[in-house]
Figure 1 (cartoon, rainbow over the protein chains, first blue to last red):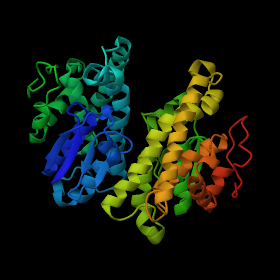
Figure 2: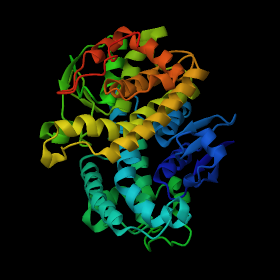
Figure 3: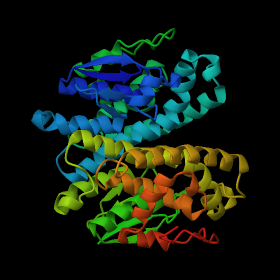
Figure 4: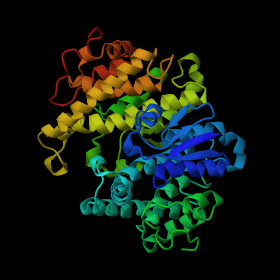
Length: 230
Length: 230
């Protein structure tokens, strides 16, 4: 069986869990605290980042974007109508642009502040950067989150799904990233009704269930987190 | 004809120029100063990043990684033995891991300090962040560069090309990123002889010629920059 090294509060890890679930690919989940820079983990992925997928022969495939491409290549063509990437190169480029937006830009500008301060630094030992949350960093993350949610709202308003007419990797990347912030009660859903409608559709998919049962140590989810009719 | 929005001192832009040249695809070059956040440019790429490729029908393809995938899809299969991506999914994942390393990790940890301070901030107006270089940022970039060059040396020592047996997008991503630092005289080639041998092979390719004639305003290249026998 495949094995996925992940963290439950890492949006990039959740993205791969969603693809695996949508494609019905089984993988054992292994929680990794990347800040520990565990030797065996660094050997698999010298960049030290999550997620990492091990295939059946223990070959590591490193990084969310790259695992997403790998799964599309080995599984996508078998999925026919339920493939999460279109066939045409220009459409693929647009899906990848949005995937990249959430795996890199959102991860850096929002999660890198808010999730880092509120979740990861609470789990880190002091000598690896743990400690109480920095309020300036959280303010920056919240300001950025507003801009990103406005962009999601704009996409949701102008398209059926975020990347075009059909559900795609773009929706899973965005929903994975946003779901962590939603867990933390950071999303102002009133402000972006189109984004809310889109997220409600994604959230009710069976693939989303395992994400909704995730727990961060010592930090209960926002009241509406598991509510499909939030 | 295609059009590429780029900056001559952006490693990610140079990566795409190398692929275009290797594949013999013509594109008009348009220099863009991304910190200006020009309205027409932001419309093409809301992330505001370089490079952006416009196809013949003016469809924007945004970001180096994504343009690289696009060019592989539309041109790669026609190139047969000179294709810059392998066929097998696991090998493709390894090429992409290294491409991602240079387009994101190196860009952030090295270019984001050194090229930003020594080139971009010199071209920016003061109100957009321009000014004299910050020496702490440059020190951080130089320390990171040493680590990255050690990794390049290790890859060059254990493989024929950085991603495996054949020249691939991995080599072009690494060489593009490193070439900007080499322009600035920041590479200690004595310290990494295997990396030097690898870079000499890449540098003598015809695709590299246009990079070697690039100039940054007011900043002449290091003495050996255009020397193929450096």
